[in-house]
Image (tube, one colour):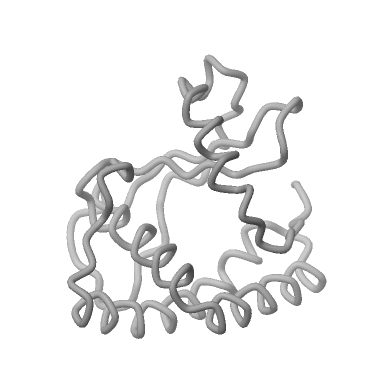
Length: 147
């Protein structure tokens, strides 16, 4: 099992993703699908059928910067969860810094990727409480490039 590695946030990630997105025929571009990560975290109280919370999970090819790529279907609740989570943290640097610190500490203590995710998920749910309030207050919607 791969060890969790956390990097400090970098503005270059947007450009990295744009470059990777052009290559994403995922498996055809050398991305390795990680079997067993087909179900996304479901926040407490989240409803809908299991397929609304399914995703595909890929690791970047060896010649790319290490990256985990989560692929969700457009319009599904788990797509909204991920995009709102991302956008909220981009607009709230203090929350992003606290979340980054949590991830660093968890990665130092938890060697197993699945255990790391299981312990991290409740913190994500706490962030989403504030993110949902922010979404209502700002009229947040996923951007056109998020599909």
